[in-house]
Image 1 (tube, rainbow, N blue to C red):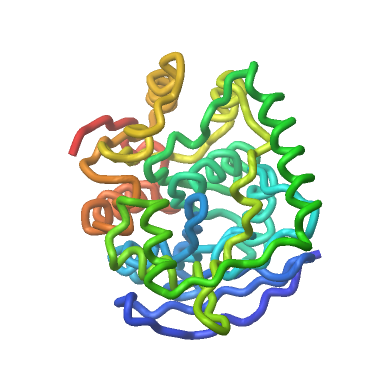
Image 2 (tube, one colour):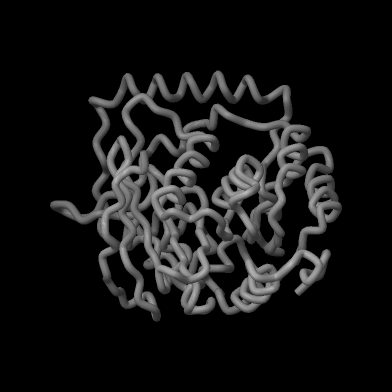
Length: 327
């Protein structure tokens, strides 16, 4: 049964040059929130944000993309304005994939494209492998579509994640949300994300904090910081990629995630080769992990050209087979 899907509420902010509507979807534990742009009948594109971010991460990019397309950017549970998962529950990739499945069922989208940043790109990769018939094109922003874990670490991570969750649950009654001034909240956000411009930080904070007596508290669920109990190995990840039928483009930032986070054992090169073998487009671009938010003009035309070249009315023979370049 399709969950209740509330009407879209129109709103505007000074940080957006293009009107958006508030997306609200009733789910068993509360609601999922997000934003929508463009006509309801437009080409459907789902936008998935990175870890600890929210749908605001797309606020500067989407105004530069085709205005006759329909963009829906969600706040994952525990992020932005979406409800936290129920007490005692974990945050793990299969659950985020299930969240996406709920959203597209409520939207009644049978086939659509995805733009995913960082963690959102990894969710996009897993969703596209599980539901290949639903996804026509994927843009991965500074992510490979999955992050492999050494087999020897998988059960260590699971044990730690379970212990962390139980410890958190046992201390719930003692926890109090820290109240910040707006400037201190912004300072904290920028310490965690030093590449964010002031303007980008303000955009994310629109959905990342809530005003209370005495200041602001962060809206995110602290449990998103706990160790993920569901990891996949390199072999599993490469098999997952083989299941994806969508056309895929990777935009990898020169000063992005893989500048600070080095994959072990040459895994990065192995994943790039796997994507190349699958005729994905790989573009190395100058910029940081949040280039799509900080400098959206650097990637907007690339994304538009890619998605237009793989539009629903194009046949496979009309699409480019592969592109690896450096910008």
